[in-house]
Image (tube, rainbow, N blue to C red):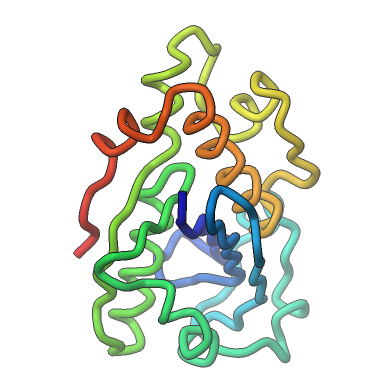
Length: 178
């Protein structure tokens, strides 16, 4: 399997307020690389978001803006590339809104939501939050709401599912993000 697991953290309820981004790159079913960056958003921070992820306005004071980060990661978001996330509608929405906010071209790529796959394959779990799925499957999740740890955990969920159920059933969950 080849894919990229994506995770955003946001500074506020505004979808374009990305304050960190992580990518975990998987090739031939192995994690081969990771990318992480703080991002200086074009919005104020909301205390509740800070409480969740621990990123403060001072932490991103010298961080790159989203367009600067996008220059490095855009090649991962191509029509024939699979980009996954746990609760993909959120992360895909952050990406779409942030691209729109900065007047950058829309990214078109294949996507898969590991919340949906975990609901299908593990209906007996008490819920399908990232930390719960990781606990149930024995996947390490060191710092929940750290984008890099979350993207790695998401990648490991999909790899676990592929190893236990095969890749064919997962294809039903792949959609085009446009």
